[in-house]
Length: 274
Image (tube, rainbow, N blue to C red; front, side):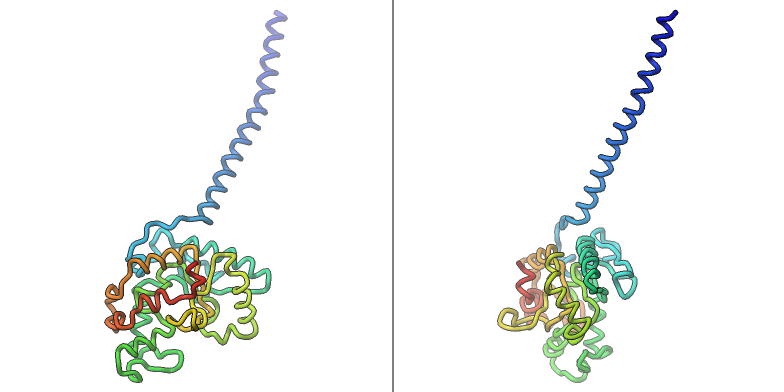
C-alpha cells in the first residue's frame, strides 16, 4: 500500500517538474522562430531582388498602384496622397529621412513614380502650350520647328517612355528650382544630401553640365535616384531601348533626330552609373 502511495507521489512530482521546463523550452523555440521570421522580413525589405526587366517596365507602361514591387508613399513624407515608389527605394528613403531629421533636415517628396500616361500628360500640355515652361516660353507659339520645340521641353522634362520616374527609383524633393537649394534651408538640405545620400543608395543623376556630362537635362538639385536599382535599369535601357520605340505622343517623331536614348536616358552623372 505504501509503495503504491509512494509511486503515485513520485509520478506527480515528475509531471510537475517536467511541465514548466517543457513550457520554457517551447517558449524559447517560439521566440527563436519569431526572431528568425522578423529577421527574414527585414532582410526581404532591405535587400529585395530586382525581378526580370522588360521594355514595358523600362518605358513606364504599367500602373505603379497595382504593381507588386511598388508601395504607396505615406503623406508624412510627401506633399500629397497617391504617390508611389518601388518598395526597395522607399525603405531606403525612409532610413535616410530618419537620419536627416536628426540633423534638422526634413525632406518632402514632391514627385515620385510617373508612368507613361502621366508623363504623356506633362509633355503634351507643354507641347500644346497649355502649360508654359518655367521661363515663360509657350512652345506651341514661340518655337517653330518640332525638333527645337522638343529640345526646349527636354531642358527639364522627359519624353514619355524615357523618364527615370517611370522606374519608381527616382524622387523630386522639396522644390523644383535650383535657386531654392542655393541658400537657407534649401542649401542645408542639398549639402546634407551631397554628403550623406550615397550612404543610403541615392545619387543625383542630373548634375551641372560640363565636360563630364555634356548631354541631357539641365541640372536638377531636387532629383535623387536610388542607384542600386536605377543603375541596373539604366544598363538595361542602354542595351535594349531604341529611339524608334519612343512613340504615341505629340512630337515623338523628333526622338530619332535628337537621339534621346543616348543624350537623355544615358546622359546622366557618371556617379549614378558606377
